[in-house]
Length: 155
Image 1 (cartoon, one colour):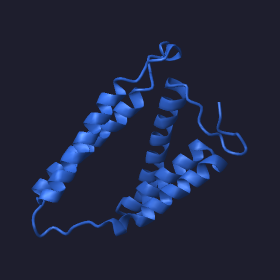
Image 2: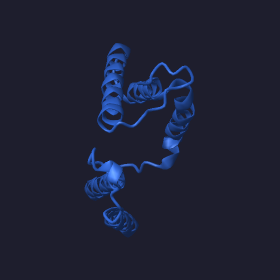
Image 3: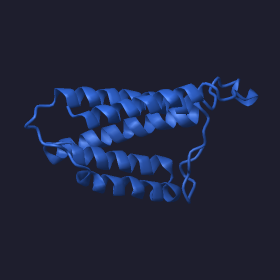
């Protein structure tokens, strides 16, 4: 593994550690005491995921054989456009149908095998992931989700 990747990984780990340290000093408002979820929880979660993904990346890079081909960012451009499209579609359709369609598309394109298997896996993943996100944000945390123009998918 080259030094640039090691330095990049150490930089990302430093950023996530600093992010956690700064998040721990955020004030805990009185209105958040009832739900026990304050403003520091989300940044700590994101910083922890950044640290975890960085560690996984460094381990995978250290175990990669020299003749394995390098993945370049050009292959990710269609995915970036897909996520940008998701951000445009959410205000119109609402969170639930837009997220379901995004998950079905991503899982459908990334899964290998016959079409029937791909469709069943993608629809099952769409239902599970969308339901899990809805349950966490709307039911557990009480965060109102975008309902779309027609407002069919709200509370």
